[in-house]
Image (cartoon, rainbow, N blue to C red):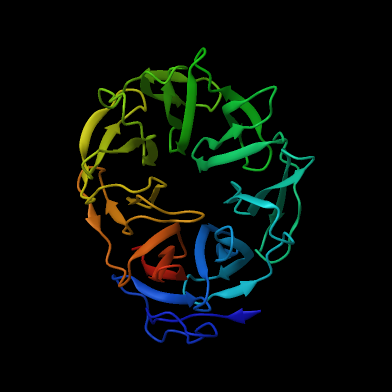
Length: 379
């Protein structure tokens, strides 16, 4: 294991940078970690905060015939968000598919991953850890053949939304958990013979919201919807809550909690990102716009509330592309772009122990990138 930390924004040319920053965290964002070998594409994948501190996962891709190939996953642990140790990733090999890194209600870390067997069949497996270093198997009661799109915990439990790939029960569904460890099927997202897609959901102080798109079987039209629940089991639908739908432009909405309220976001053709706000997850009103300058080349957003602020990016996650940038808002209406000293795609945002942390991917030249971690005071 090695402690890898650096205040520098430039990528390493060979071995990872290993300097530890000497200055304390202030109001501005400070870079505290740079990692990469200068000859691959390092991607920040996930970031959470639990009882052992901040835990992050990164992935390394290398180019070659057939396109980029995943070669290794790395895991990073920090007690304070500033000094990071590379710890052993608990799942061997690159074939197991990383579904999610999350935390339980009690602050334990959970990795959920898929193991492919028998062609298209994929087992859903999980491991749990109290410290981010030692892991053991976890029985989640989740079915096999899942593609998880969202896991969130709030004041009334946890919500997981996933696509089911099994032939006998296809389509998205929602699972509820009181503890973030064991899950029960709570809602099947069906709309007659229409095709339903969901890429995001949220858990807040007073319940849960799912946002998605329902498309006609002949693709002639589509309709946005939200579903709201106070207990994770009974759901109230709202159809066309955001804007009159354009039949030829169909990005999927994303949603995040902001205290007891909710904010949703959808891109426009021209570039800015429209936002809506709701006090109950059912009735929505226009809030403002994220001043993103289009056109939009891809839509893989990171959208979540950390403390009193919403964080938004159009691109993030497993293999980001398009325009970098991270915006914040205290109300979902007025947005400011963060100055990290680098053009970054966030893999995750988390808060704890008096600091906010962003784990992100910085492309240095085409086809090559490094990962970084930035911290600021949470006060």
